Image (cartoon, rainbow, N blue to C red; front, side, top):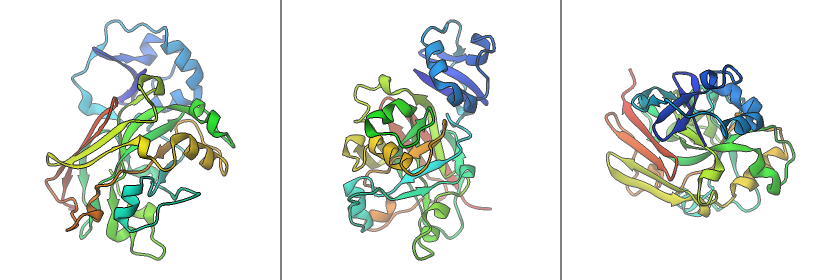
Amino acid sequence: MRIANLDGRLCLVVADGFIDVEKVSDGQFDAAPERVYERWPQFRAWADTASTADPMAMTNVDRLGPPSPAPSQIFAIGLNYAAHADESGFAKPASHPPVFTKYVTSLTGPYGTVRLPPDGHTDWEVELVVVIGRPAFQVSEAEAWDCVAGLTLGQDISERILQSAATPPQFSLGKSYPGFAPTGPWLVTADEFPDRDDIGLRCTLNGEEMQNGRTSDLIFTVPQLVANLSSVLPLQPGDLLFTGTPAGVGLGRTPQRFLKPGDELVSTGENIGELRQRFVAAT
């Protein structure tokens, strides 16, 4: 199953277009996409038998918003691929994943324009993003996938100068400018993947490949991350978890390379879809 946020309305995504959930369910489910995660088990049961006749044409994808538009928490994991840890100059984490946040005001949909901070070094980081589908507190790894509504794609866009301006680095602030957390294009449930633990991720800049990795190379897997975070605090329906980025970021290149006005960044998730961001100068 795939669901989308189209013009702020919850939709099922089918082969021929979009199905408006509130209309097809006769009001059983709210039009607001963020409300569906509060009733995720009931929604899944309904969606399995919902009518998919007469969909809206898939010609308005530029109006897609984030699949989970109002998370109470956004978590992000650092250095979760060994090759990325190496290119960043850090040791591979051993027992605990590095965790930071991206503030909610940085969250956007899959397509759009992002203003670059002035005098910055803004970088790209394509990531698999987990959307939580039910309350999860002190859950085991074996229970973790049952707490996941589905998966989507994200870009952990990062301003490296601000990120490193303090000691220790202030990762969260440098990764939370407006537009620095695009997600989408929709949420895909785990059963739609041939292997939910092995999903290809790719990122191109102006058509040139920058990143190409697979989630089977994660140091800390999705179940491990959910169990680790929930051992400390409750995860809430609709929360987002950026799981880390493969190697190939601009900071790790020789010479280093960062985003500039006019650049187009295209991020692709296998069996998920793509994000597309264009960058403009700050005004």
